[in-house]
Length: 320
Image (cartoon, rainbow, N blue to C red):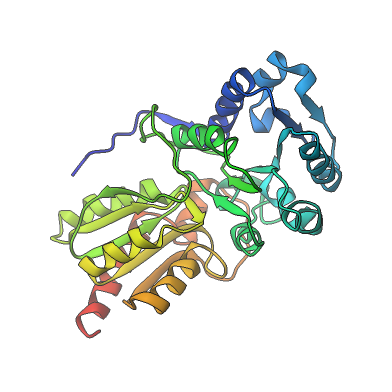
């Protein structure tokens, strides 16, 4: 079962920084904008190597989105950088009107997403951002799971024409995907084959799902694990093909269950192949201050919570 090994913990925001360094050296059209959070976004190396391609906007996120939209008209590929809360909720009108509506080639890169932002508390822990962004027509929404995948996603979105929301986090988490991976937007990744239940996870919950699957195997339950790094467009075929085999599904995300990955999966199943589903997500609540591990435990966003959901959904399967 153990195909994926923790290669050492790294923060996914550093994966973004590493990807930007590569783009700085390989794609002269890429420019970076930041709202006074260079250290948090880990893009100092990009700035050092490409000072003329960096714009420090200051604490003026709405202005940053307008500047980014304008830069696309000149043929540049702007990557905006700030916390997820300020990348979405604070500037939603600017994104809708100046970027999404006219399908501008802006890459909205959002760090410190979800509840694992930790001690900064509820005002900074956005749990609605996936829903906000996936509702915008033409917006691609990506939520990678570790350092290597975030780096690969950062590089890949520069080649994608159109607006992208790239979401990543603050804490160091297991780095377990290949360093040389080919990141394909909209293509789910089958991490573990199983026959009894499908676990579809995104972001930090992918590693937790792999741990849960290993524990479940020891209890006689065969869990298929799928990494959904691209929430929109969703790889519906991968999900349908899996549930046709397993007959039940658990979705796992560090996001509110309203508007997140789970709802997108539920829509797919309802219209194409209904099976029992359980949701691992925050339950219509704001977060609070605490360590990432404390918060993931309290809000039911870890391997143990996934296991409980699997037991629940497989019981439902028997009467479905």
